[in-house]
Structures are given as structure tokens and as C-alpha cells.
Amino acid sequence: MAADYYGALGVAKDASDDEIKKAYRKLARQLHPDVNPDPEAQERFKAVTAAYEVLSDPQKRQVVDLGGDPLQSGPGSAGNPFAQGFGGLGDIMDAFFGQGGGRGPRSRVRQGSDALIRIECDLAETVFGTNRELAVDTAVVCSTCTGEGTAPGTHPQTCDTCQGAGEVQQVQRSFLGQVMTTRVCPRCSGLGSVIVTPCGECGGDGRVRARRTLTVKVPAGIESGMRIRLSGEGEVGPGGGPAGDLFVEVLEREHPVFTREGDDLHATVSLPMTAAALGTTQKLETLDGEEQLDIAPGTQPDEVITLRARGVPHLRGTGRGDLLVHLDVQVPTRLDARQEELLRELATLRGEERPGAHGRHGGLFGRRRK
Image (cartoon, rainbow, N blue to C red; front, side):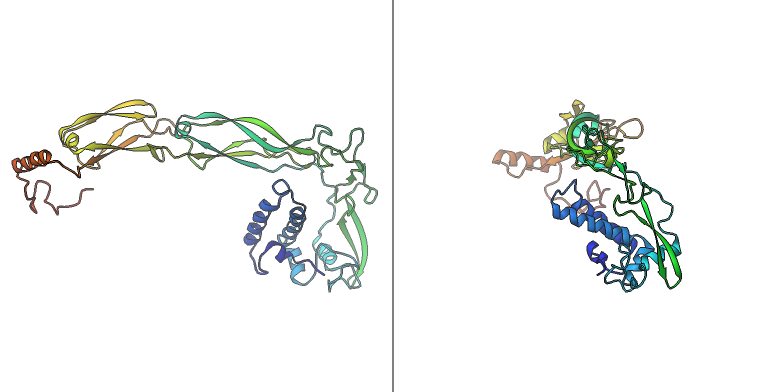
């Protein structure tokens, strides 16, 4: 019976190429042996990988849609209506489209995958930059076999089924006559060699998992969510192949005083109503040290004082953003008798006992200020 490749990926039969690719990537992240060591998950990962290999190939997918199984061949392909009496529709498709011929053995050494790690940084660290030491768990070259995958003193042996070619040829009869097909060698999986005595440390994979310490430089001005790329520090590939890259994603912690918008910082300073009216000086502890704020007499609520070049350095370029200080004028909610008397006296002196509809700034219902 033909395998249910669509079901393995959880997609409909009319799924687009992008939907198939997204489904595979999602399942691969969950089931990859480096992430999920459960034996059942590993078996499912193999099935998912095989399903993606078939459905991502238009010709193999056509075979599936016609009721066949492109990964099965020969008279024993049960359930394949095109496999009775000749080598299967997959073999004929190979003959028509030249699939599988002349590829030769594939290398046991393959490129490793990328790895991702996330770190949290304080605002001061993302503003000024820092160096962080990371403990990273990745696949590294097996020190026992140096990546070859064989026990000490032994080496991979030439496959006696394909004689090192990685492929086997077969002549079969079809309604077109005799058809010669070329298939990946079933014994060595196309490698051209087999490991008779696997390494006891890595089991023949040529790599083992290990923890190591790296130092990453966090550049000044980096934003939350950005990634730092460390070339060649990811997962070592099968057979001791070249390592992928390690990506370090920076997450910025929330600061109790400052908020960040791009390369600008924002802070809020609360002022008593009297200080805003009379003017004052206010100390503000910034990331660069203590700053003196000069509050002008008559300062209005929500006014902003800009401290130039006290923000975040530009990641790509020179200079820094600004620190914008928002002034929050506090109006008293409780007054004692003497305070109320003084405010009423001030209101009388200013002619503000009963605010009218027309005043110095357009009145109570004047145009809204930008």
C-alpha cells in the first residue's frame, strides 16, 4: 500500500509548494533528533523527511497523485497499480525524465545546520555594548574517530552491492520495451561505502554533542530581536562535516525608568504645580550619569525637554539618538484650609475665579495644541 505522504505532513492534496515547505519545517523543528531524542519522534522525523522529499518533487508528487509510490519499486510494490508486470511507474518516470542516472556516490560528509540561542541584555548593555560568555550545546566532531565514524584502526569499506558507485542499475520490461533504470544503492544509501565497525563514541555519525563556552560581542546600539551571527559555530555536520552558523538573538529587558523607541530614549519627570509655575532645577540620573534639568517658569504639562546625544548609538553610522524628558505637572488633589485660601487669593489676583470661554490661549475651548 502506498504511503500517505500528505497525511505525514498534515497537508491537503491540493496544498501549494509553500504550504508543504512550511509544514515540513514546522514538524522538523519539533521532531529533529537533536531536539527530540524520543525514538518514536525519530521514526516520525524519517517519515516526515521522506514525505517532503516526495511532495517537493513535481514528478514524484505526480506519481503519488496517480496512486503510486515513487519510493517503492519492483514487483513487490504492493498497492501500486502501475507496478504490476514491470518495474513501477517510478522507474518509467526515471526513464522518461532521466532521474537517478550518473550521479555517483554521495559524500558521507555533509554541511551542519545552523543553531540559535537567545540572551537577555539590560538597556545599558544594548546601548553601550558588552561581551557575554555563552554556554552552548551543539554537535562537535567526535574526538575518538575524528569524524570518520569508524572504530579506531578501521575505515569505511567499499559497498559490495554497488562496488562503490552508490547506484545500482536494473533492466526491466515495460510496455515500451526494455528500460534501464538507475537507483540509489539500498545497502549503502548512495554513499558507496559502509561502516562495518562503527565508532563506539558517536555510533558512526562522526559527531557528538558537547557543551562549550563562547564569547559573543554585543555591539552598541543593537535592538531587541536582532541576531548576531557567529560563522562556523553552529552544528557540525554528519561525518564531521563543516559546521553551520550560530545565531545569537538579543532580547532587551524592560528598564524601570527609560523606554526605547528606535535610537531615542524617553523618560517622565513629575513636577509639582508650583515648581512648573515658578521654575526649578531637577536632577536626572541618565545612562551617561547625572544630568541637570532646567525647568523654565511657566512650564506646561506634557512639555518635553530634549537632551541631545544622550540616547542610543546608531548601529550603522556615527552619533547617537536623543533622550526626551516628558514633564508631568502634578495638580494637588487635597488642600488644607490655608493652602486653599492662598490659591483662591491667587485666582482672585489673576482674575481666574471663574474661567471664561475666552482667554489668553483661545479660551477654555480653544484650538487643541499639537
